[in-house]
Picture 1: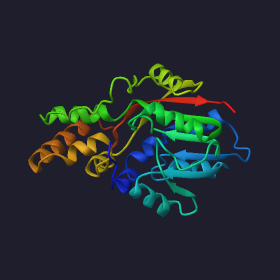
Picture 2: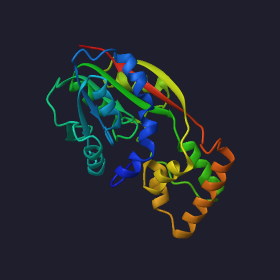
Picture 3: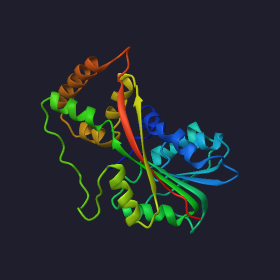
Length: 252
């Protein structure tokens, strides 16, 4: 999935949602004790900055240029490097802790990506994937607009995995982890304009789908979006239940 040029739109929309796992991850890791932490796929740097504020020695790693530009603008004191899975520009055991928040659900080879996270960690590795995401909302909007959904970009059968806590655990074990996997569920309450900013800015699968529509179909999509969120909105916001599987490997 391409995120090219989506840095500002992501920062103004889904970055808040993706940071929803941060508190749970901090509980899993405990006090920083002066440890170093690498945030792989750091996006706009929001979560990495929160780790730094909590006392960790943080380096953010992000492959997409527009994301790095936003991170540098919003968090100028955050150490930031370019690079992404499956090959990070780092030697073995570079960091005490390595984090990859909603990254392994996007890479072409999840097992190779998970193994690479393990390689650059001296100690703990933490990764998350979506087990329930906003994609259900966009599927409803697409259906309401009478548009044919984009064909799914599934991984080859021997590389894909079930997007559940159990499926995530099996994939991580295949990659050499000894994982403990939990599931976190919470309610995100974005304003409609936040949701629209994501799709209009080309963020994630829905954004890529919208970018590929004709002008007429874009108007149909927008009308359907307005109708769906009007039905769902509570006090001007759209409650959405989200779930993430979080895997932890504590070797080292």
